[in-house]
Image (cartoon, rainbow, N blue to C red):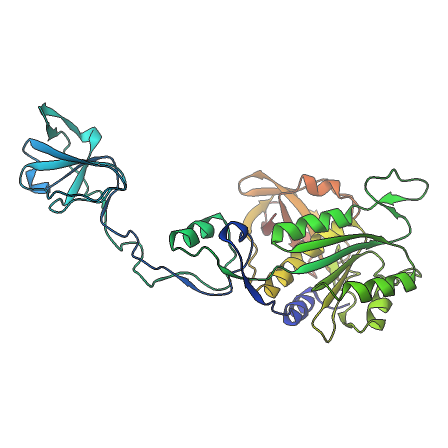
Length: 392
């Protein structure tokens, strides 16, 4: 059994960097940029009005102003503002030459035919100056950025319609165990439905990876061996749940070793998640065996596999950690492993553990909003203590 920090280090150190590809902007969500992106023009590209109003000279505000034009967004002004003149202007429209401010429509009143007067006491310039946000050539997104909705908007604004991104990891997902049946079958006798595969595929898709749901593999070494040999030809990561501990029917570690994978560890000092294996073959394909209990599978993915897969795509993962107060005391007997428990927020800065019966109690995660990890060696946390929790 190795410390969690060492397992984390070994996994990220073994993560192969995936090749890059160009994809349409509309298909780039959740992908990782493989190159820096710069703007090809100033932002804004011209002096533009920040609101609906009247473009004029500030020196003329004490006087009635003659409205000499209307400038909608998208139209280039053809006039110059002179003394005691103004132009009706819309938000986002170019400010005409001669004008040095835009007064809000709400701060004006009619002063006669085609005349307005300023009714306010003071006004800002209300002009967004050319290049005040970005200058042509400025870096807007760095390599390694995970593309979300805001990044997509930035890419569109600079004309990057086919961004270069890391190829999405192709992940083989299978559950092992003679006791398992597919989710669409009613279990009989000593059987249970396979929930881990569906959960892992959902976590992978949300990450931007491409899961291949291979179904259930029985506890049979020959079938497992053949499956591994076939799967490694088309995938970057082989992901198994179940069959990774030290029981008589836990064949996954031996099968992976026989297929040429070097196991970098076979047990981690974490609860849930202790019986976890990870390895890599000479061709760069990686393998990971997760515990069969669903909460274990979920937690291991969030704490170890998420940063590992993002590392493969060139992104350094930083989970969102917030500090909150513990609403009730926490105690445990064994302290040789770090323990992760699901919690929910009672107030914006107070958390409490959800009802949780152990690593098979997947329903508890539906009520969880964060994970609280208690370090190795810590036996108790008093009520009201400040704790760091990882948002889900």
